[in-house]
Image (cartoon, rainbow, N blue to C red; front, side):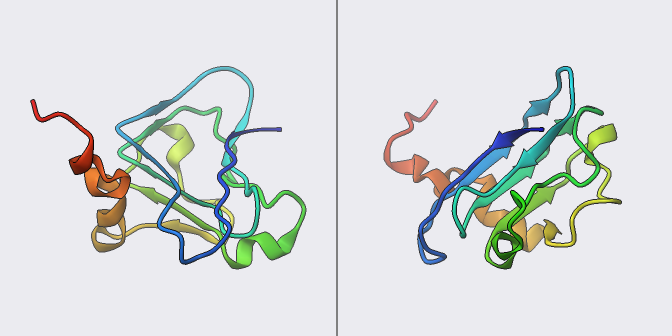
Length: 118
């Protein structure tokens, strides 16, 4: 089964990961939102439309249960049939406003240092 993301962090202290904001997940077939590439994977989808292609579990542990001990997989204010959190793996997070804040602004990608103001 295909995964949209395979993010790798080598340590929980690294301030990195993937953040998808105002996105659309659609297509054919069935997909997981992500799977770990190492022990500290971090991925957040926010304000994302998820079509029915997203599997109910949402996230894959790559058949190694130690991965879900340190991964950070979050969803925030997503919509569509694939965004139903019922059936998600127990280690996925339905983020609160406070938990989502670090991932929904340009500061997560240090955008204030390289993005040009409009």
